[in-house]
Length: 194
Image (cartoon, rainbow, N blue to C red):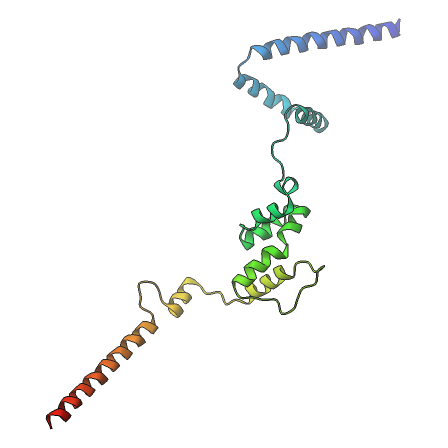
């Protein structure tokens, strides 16, 4: 009797749940896309973490993942080619994405080109198993550079609308040469007249 009442209550509860689920799904079929989204948002916000994980797993089976890490799909040399277009600052940021990105972003082939382009050469030959020597060398060379503010650079090197001191010296030298030629011509004329 108590067991039968309990069993009868559970059966009634299951039938009521199925009836309401069918009703909600019927309404859901009649709604517009916008209404469906408005309904799903508060519904999912009330779900627990395990329920959301279950939804995620179910969705991943139905909707395949389209965003894939290119470094895991492309061959290594193509991934390095893509990363070769990054600036040194971007390469350092990319190295913080994941372990795999770090291994790629710190490859000597990416950093040696940047060093050699600026005339910074390693003072030794790196070994076959040495890792990150060129990046360390690049960082140490950049840290020793004397950075100038725009005002300091303008005072030291001048600006585009201001002639640099080298041009002034050339003009003065040309004037001196003209004066010397003029003096020589005058003396030649004097010599001929005598």
